[in-house]
Amino acid sequence: MQTSQAGQTGTRDRIVMAAARLLQRQGYVGTGIKQIATESQATLGSIYHFFPGGKEAVAVAAIRYSGEEFAALLREALDSEADPAAAVLSCTRQLADGLRESGWVDGCPVTAAALETLGTDSEIQQVCADTLNGWERLVYDKLLGSGFRAQDARELATTVISAIEGAEVTAQVNRNEEPLLAAGRQLARLVRSYEADGPGVAGQ
Image: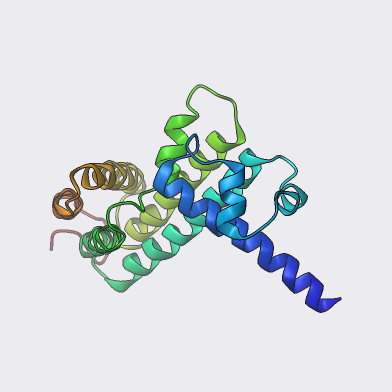
């Protein structure tokens, strides 16, 4: 019984990870349920067993999975540097490295899925919004912990995530990491330009 349960868990994870890779590379519209089954080495019956809502339900789980992966990368980058400006720069460098190593194909599935489902009241839109807000919260917490005023930290966090998302798309289109690196340098400069209220003041 335990072996069977482990196998089922493994199948679900394979489906989610395969869907996440496909969404990164070809978007939501371009990804079919049969392709997800093939890539995950699962049957269509297995997919509908774990995800009765079909393709949209798989996509929601895949976006959550990818969002948590990026959150882990972002959290690690933010924790690696005491200076929040240096931490933001570290994050863009890591993203640039990963994008280059993937051959410019593993972009952000949140951006693609969000744009393709604009104007719909779908669960995909909600999970994309929740994911982006979660990333902003990580940056906000870093800035707040470094002594930034709450309003400044909130607006800077929104700016950082928005700029990184746009820079990643530009880097993909141009097959060049410089847009991400340039965004990182300018974001670091922006963060340093703010006066913080407590210890670890940006710009000092």
